Length: 186
Image (cartoon, rainbow, N blue to C red; front, side):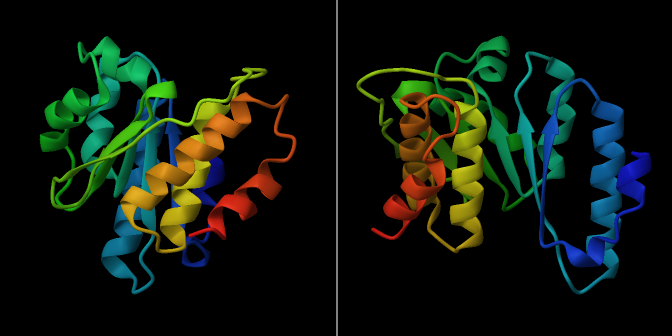
């Protein structure tokens, strides 16, 4: 929190938080952004990723504009698929927020600001080489596409394609080139 307090939020349009076990610090940072948004004309879009199997992370659901919930988190809460997780958790998010739940090779579902459920199929790679970072890759693709004003449905599809591609390569080799290839096809 000490380092975050040093930031001049006027220089940011989007901030994404990865919530782990540091709930109090994350809440304090989210409150700082909320105070900024209440008192400044340049609004910051806030995204939160809830990944870990910890029920207490649910307190973060109403604190962001875009919330990513992991398959592990959803299953920990008793949900067996992404759609049921969205339907069960959406009442906890702030009005107009987007709730997104990737489900690996099965794709991803999202609820937009009006509560409509959207889906993208997964794009599994023929040969799985490295899944480490596939979730972060999905999130990065979705956020970049949202910033570029793609529809939420397009964002889900692009994120799923990018994450599927990532699983087929070692490390992050070629992700930028592949992203440019799929994004320019829109």
